[in-house]
Length: 497
Image (cartoon, rainbow, N blue to C red; front, side, top):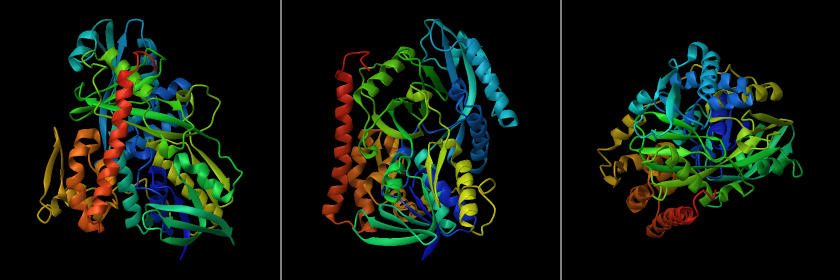
């Protein structure tokens, strides 16, 4: 079969392009050599936001677009995106001044216009401590309060990809593109299933390379000597017991002045992120001990109840693929996207989770124009992302009644695991533990659940006992490596990052 569009990459940008194109009536095939959202798209700060910190580097157009897209996602994907209040504490002689933050919030509100979620305001130290008692009171002058939004990043990405499939796109996960050559007025791609070794081919009139940090490798299949201009930076997060109430904190690190977040996730706090240049192959990037220590120490400075010597519940890292700019500091590099054209092959670089829909619209517009494809108008501005995931899982519970309390407040049901396999293309144990449930918040929860969940998945994927053992061992070995990195971080001298 000849497709109109071959999409390489099952992260949020590839999934969004596939969905947009399929909803317009294009014949689409998507390939990813791993699981949906298995790269950077499941290792983000899990925010849908305008990017208030980007105002410091003059990225006003990006912020305005992101605020517009934030409003759309809150309307069209309420199962995955929800409003979240943020507090910026002001300390004497530390961080951004109250005047600078007040001016930034005024500009942020102006760029949002009628789409702002609530009015921002400034509070004194007494009210700031009432809102978030975990804050360090010493030197606290007050705080600024504003609103953005939070998301379940992996589940949002999976939902976008599955909706693309509903619209007619063909999805092939754990499928690696190994050859891409021009043929006639289009392209011929050869691919291989990484689990079974089965090979196949697909012809397409156009290609969108949305492989994120692997985009240069994919582009190299067609143009071996070409470079796309990607700057790869490592973003590390740690998960801690919950320190804040329902509000997120936007903090400035004393060590280097960069911004990071403490984000509430139920009984937990997600802290991040770092922004460090990293030339390691993206699939081998891990949370560095110095990054972990940096986050633990900077958090303890503002939230004194946190002991930086206490091991975090998780520590993970992802790789951003930024369009290479002139900024010396990685966190000052623009988050604007870039589209590199090689005839009817488009390579996407950079971009933000928040603007995935609008970027996909631009990309598909180009594909349609360049290839002369007859297509309908873009529908993603008005088409809700289907919900009902919890209801669908509940409908399976009578036939799959297993349930496990994995750790603390985290649990998983057999129905969730079965639904992930049957409806969300999970093929490996890690896919369920890391990206289809909230067990990712605690390493001990993942360890405890691994054997039981593998047993639940086995009959649906044809695993024998040896295959189940391999799946469990793969998860446990990754968690052992993570534990070693955490221990190295705790053993390092304080302030050494």
